[in-house]
Length: 112
Length: 112
Image 1 (spheres, rainbow over the protein chains, first blue to last red):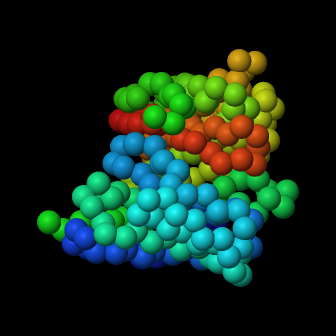
Image 2 (image 1 turned 180 degrees about the vertical axis):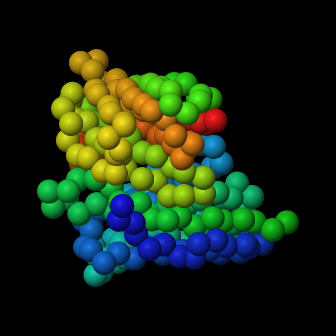
Image 3 (image 1 turned 135 degrees about the vertical axis):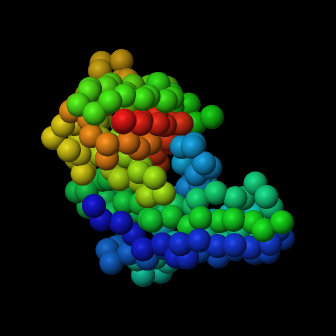
């Protein structure tokens, strides 16, 4: 099925570093969501974005809804060990197709 | 804890068998979604139910079927199982059809 292009696929960083990842689509979306998945667990919603240009924070996490509505960005500041996991973006266009389309995921590893 | 429950947590079965996965949505949520996640892969949308009716269909095989009952819990039936059906199966729920989805902990299916 259709998937969003998410990059990078994986990141290896040191504790305390900032992290940036993004998601791009060939289609316009009206909603962007960012989820985090720990190994063997279900994805947990981090941030929801509903408006082009919107910038929303959740603690050390900040996400933006791109102006073109075809992309979104997630930044994590001052990473800590519990940030390890897979981050997924998801988009929905609400134009008669209500299903979420998920990105391929960014696997974040923190090097001690 | 998202409020979405899934049972069983783990399931081991043989090829050719049939299994049923169960999901209880968050209290008040009318929509239920099923996803498949194979090893190190993204989430593939299978099917959505809203208030007992099928609302959207994704990449769901003909060997798979689902339903949502009057009490809003849902079951995903997988039959004639193949080795490739081994995966994590997630259920998610939302209040309305286009609202943010909250995921359950998943059922890990292993077909031997």
